[in-house]
Image 1 (cartoon, one colour):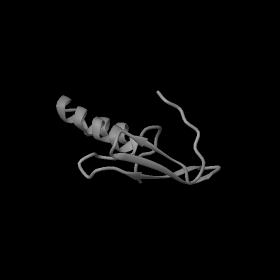
Image 2 (cartoon, rainbow, N blue to C red; image 1 turned 60 degrees about the vertical axis):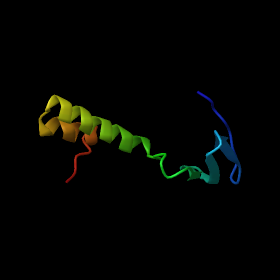
Image 3 (cartoon, one colour; image 1 turned 45 degrees about the vertical axis):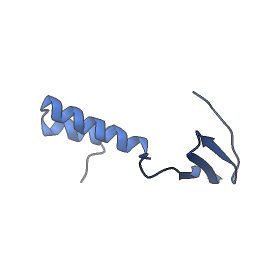
Image 4 (spheres, rainbow, N blue to C red; image 1 turned 45 degrees about the horizontal axis):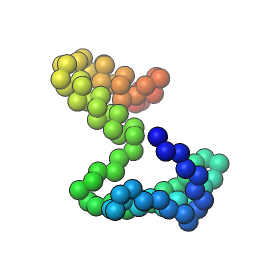
Length: 79
């Protein structure tokens, strides 16, 4: 794993096709702009985890409750 420190306005490149620019930084986190070819999916980690949980649940034929727990951990179930 590579760990970098970047300031607002600075960027980094991944290969020839992907550029990540720091737009803003505040106490709550950083805003990033990601430029990548359309064929490369760019997803937030929580979406990837939800997709994996959904895929696993479908393979295992899990009960719907298991999928809800995977999608909404720590009692964050929808109201």
